[in-house]
Amino acid sequence: MGTLKRILGLLAAVLLALSLWELAQRCFILSPSYQTGKTPQDYGVTYQETWLPVAKTEGGGLVHVWWLPAESPAAPAVLFLHGNDSTLYTDIDLILRLRRLGLAVMAIDYRGYGGGAWYLPSERSVYADARAAWQAFMKLSPEASKHLVYGHSLGGAIAMDLAAVSLGVDGVIIDGGFLSIADIAKSHTASWLPFDALIRHNFSSYSKLPAIAAPKLFIHCSGDEVVPIELGERLYQLSPQPKTKLFMRGGDHDGCYRRDGEVWATWVADIAGKK
Image 1 (spheres, one colour):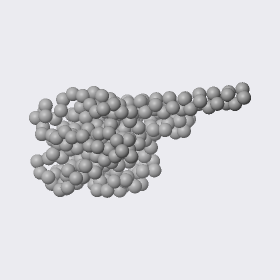
Image 2 (image 1 turned 60 degrees about the vertical axis):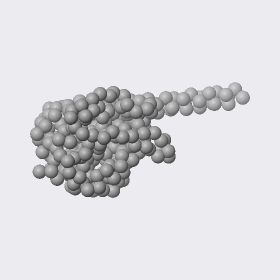
Image 3 (image 1 turned 180 degrees about the vertical axis):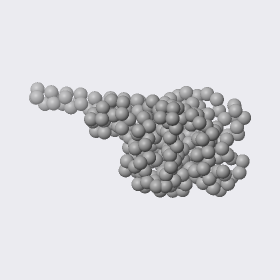
Image 4 (image 1 turned 180 degrees about the horizontal axis):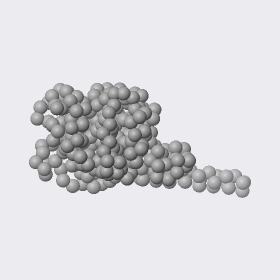
């Protein structure tokens, strides 16, 4: 009986450790931010704010949506997906820059981010949120000349998952992207460490790349302190055609698009079909 108790106690300790490791990953890797702030209206930009319900099979809840319509319903439209430790409000400058290019823009806060109800996100939940947003996005912009998805940082991995499984994706823009969380961890520590086996919410895009047939634009700055540009180059090299890259010297992870705003605007406008 004593041996059985020790085994059960050890099993309980292991299960507790695994549960804590799971929670730690969700908190650290997805790093939900609750920051709020100014809206497009504060900058004189017309927008609509809605809350998109998520299926109960995916946990239920609401996705916070900003919709910034273009002047013409035929203008290209883009779904913007932010990264971890970010919200609609922290990324409003990038969102407004996309709108100023003449694009209709939908931007979302995943469940657990921004001003929504408390929710601990997971890799599965943010994928589900993006897919639900894409369906709503397509309904809001049926006449758009192109439908694109723009993902920054972790949002790039979410964008690649979305593009691999969704219909109607005409272009994919990956800003500060990577192939997996494990790759980032290795780049900051040692390549031999077994992060692939340890990380559950790995956001791996390796197996998804062959399914992304749409044109792809990869944006990266050499000064990226979070995702080294070498990881961006590897992502670019493993991605199928058609593809192009805008790699710029200097800059940083969160503001690469500001490194040379005119060049960034030209390349984004090109993949969107705006001249």
